[in-house]
Length: 159
Image (cartoon, rainbow, N blue to C red; front, side, top):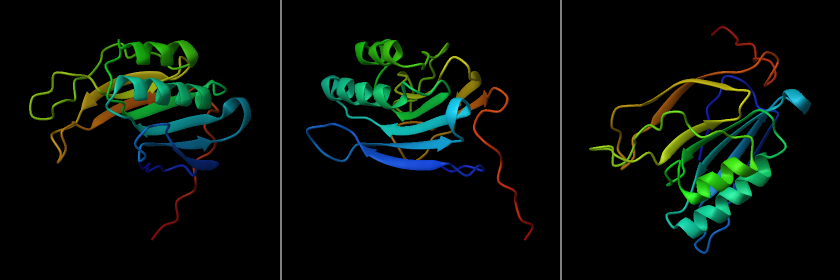
């Protein structure tokens, strides 16, 4: 998992996700502190529903104290699945208004990759990018943060 940002995070933590087979993880970047903090998590979840349920429960626990949160990545689950419904019930994250099919990349029919936001963050537009070298299409989004959320931009130095 990786994250590229123009803003410098306050903290970045890489979590191993619970699973019988090690290797799945979630990267949590926190921008700002306190009530105005923004939590951005990138995750790649397991293929089995049972493992995903444990992993999403762990993610919900990590994000539950953040009123401003974004979760994105290959969640390997449709928005209406039992494990995703459990995530939405235990966190501030909202189901997508219009799921975007990303799998399989050569003929997308299933929405397994997501950019989810908490209620206070406006998800203005979500779309799949052209095919990459993967079985999933990359997903992009335009989001609007509430004022004062996420800290300040880092000044760029001229080169």
